[in-house]
Length: 115
Length: 118
Image 1 (cartoon, rainbow over the protein chains, first blue to last red):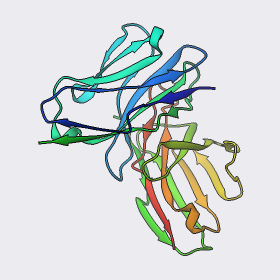
Image 2 (cartoon, one colour):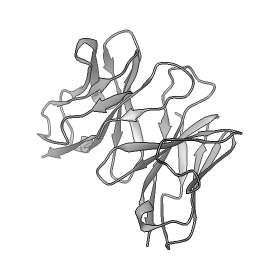
Image 3 (tube, rainbow over the protein chains, first blue to last red):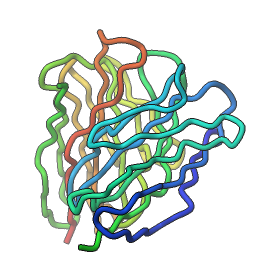
Image 4 (cartoon, chains in turn blue, purple):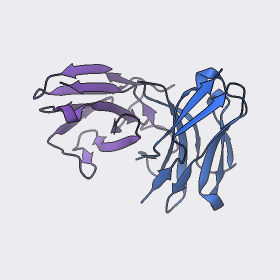
């Protein structure tokens, strides 16, 4: 069975500081990996995704993530955090096949940004 | 970009009544949509997969008679919470994927519906 672990429930960083959110996954085949962001009371917005190829993927809002197969990780990074980045971040894994994707989500990491 | 519209964004209902939540793909067709439930400060739990023109597929532990799903067209799926009780209060989110898109096209999520049962 597929699973996603986000070890950090809550992270606080200062505006302008760098950020890394951890994500570890368990999946029996080649995974699709995603990072989504959720603002309070809102749905999810896709930040970036990894399917194959270059293990460092670039996303929107200046985010990037690196797929490390040997570590089963897909950590999200941003060099300089903005106050508007405060939100809940979810890592997700899904099957690398088909036209529909059942995603398994991690428990999320809440990011707080101090000014 | 692809947009998924979910309505209503919030609803309050009395215990014992039923509530219908709509999920529409506005600029693409979706043969499959997904319904998630999210408890406060927790992750999204997949409830069911909605299939256009056929029965929904429910995840283990989800009552199909409680959460009725109808996917009558390629752009609309509805979730009806029947005989709602306070424990059904939650944040419900739908997602959809462009059926005509590439195999690696991502899921698009609605903005969710906050259901409060009093």
